[in-house]
Image 1 (cartoon, rainbow, N blue to C red):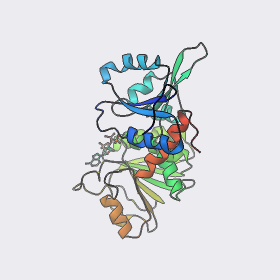
Image 2 (cartoon, rainbow, N blue to C red):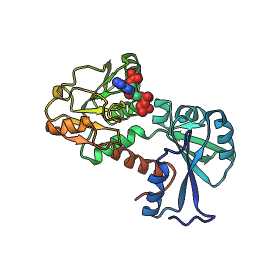
Image 3 (cartoon, rainbow, N blue to C red):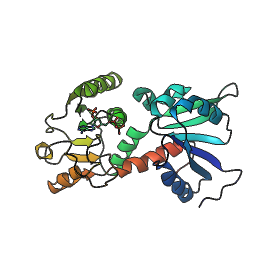
Image 4 (cartoon, helix red, strand yellow):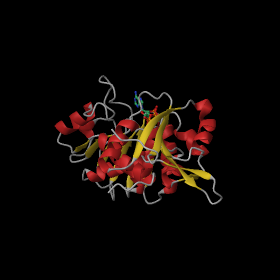
Length: 272
Ligand code: ATR
C-alpha cells in the first residue's frame, strides 16, 4: 500500500455511480510498481453537482487530475478550457488535468484515451493499423473514440457497421472530415464482414453469455484479425469462435493497460 504523505500527488476518478469504477485498482498498483508518489481515489459526483464540484476541485491545489467515466465524459469535455485532439474530435474526455494558466488561474485540460489505448494495445500485440482495412462493429461511446484512433493510426479503409445505421453514418462522416486519407463509410450491422484485415467489436454484445454474436465470423476473410474491447468476460463467444476458425485474436484488456500508460504521461508522470 502506498504511504501517503503531504508530498503525495492526488488524483481522482469522477463517476456516478461510483462503486463499479476500476481506475483505483488499475492506477494505484501501477504507481507502486513504477515508484510514483501518487494516489488515485474515487470521487462520487452527480451530474447536477458537476460544475460546482469541478470548480472546487480546480481550487484543490494538490489535485493533479481526474480520470473521467460514466456519465461525465461529454459534460466535462464541455467544461474544459483546452481539449487534446482526440477529446475535441470525439467530443468527450476520459482524463482531465489541472494546469497553471498564464494569469495564475488553474485551467482544465482534457483528452480522450479510449481509442489510442486500443491502438497501442493492438500494436503491442503485433497488429499495426497502418495501411489496413478495418471493419468496426458499433458506433456508441467507445466506438466513437476507436474509429478516430484507427483512422489516426493510418487505416486506409474503415467501415463502421451498427444496429442503428444512422449513427454509423454520422460517425463515419465525422471521421472522414478529420482523416480524408481514410475511406470511411457507415453500414448496417449485417454488412458483409469479408474483405478486411481486422474486425473490432465495440458493441456491448458479448458482455452477457446469451448475447448473439456481433458478426458472422464464418464470412470474414481467412487471416483477418478479430479483436474485442470487452474485458469481462476476457474470452467472449466471438473470440472463441474466431480462434476456432484460425483467426488471430486480441483480447480487450490491453486497451485498458496501454491506456493507463498514456494517461499517466498525460498527468505528467514519467512511466519508463
Ligand atoms: P459504449 O459507451 O459502451 O460504447 P453505448 O454508447 O451505449 O455504449 O453503445 C453501445 C453500442 O452497442 C452501440 O453501437 C449499440 O448499437 P445502437 O447504436 O444501435 O444502440 C450496440 N448495441 C447494444 N446492444 C446491441 C444489440 N442487442 N444488438 C446490436 N448492437 C447493440
